[in-house]
Image (tube, rainbow, N blue to C red; front, side, top):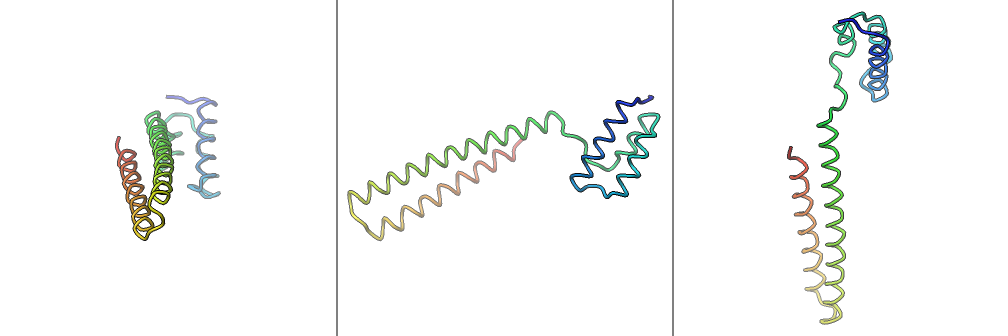
Length: 128
């Protein structure tokens, strides 16, 4: 299958992106650009892009958006959790006065619940 200027330009832009992201040296970029710009068919064009990661597919974009939503939800829940623990801590201090138990229990509960929330979020983001 013959390729046109549009396909060669697209390959050149893809090679430039890989160079900017540090996957290619300047010499490799020059060699691959020469191959891409002289390509007459799809096989020659693919040889210029071989061993480089492909552009993101729609499923990659969907996975990234899903993970971002899960992370944002986790942050919201964590912020609400922090507010609730702070309110409970202040109420405890107001009702019972300062005690060693309050200064030990509340931080431990906060750390444990925050850790569990983060682990649950990581597991959800790892799925798919």
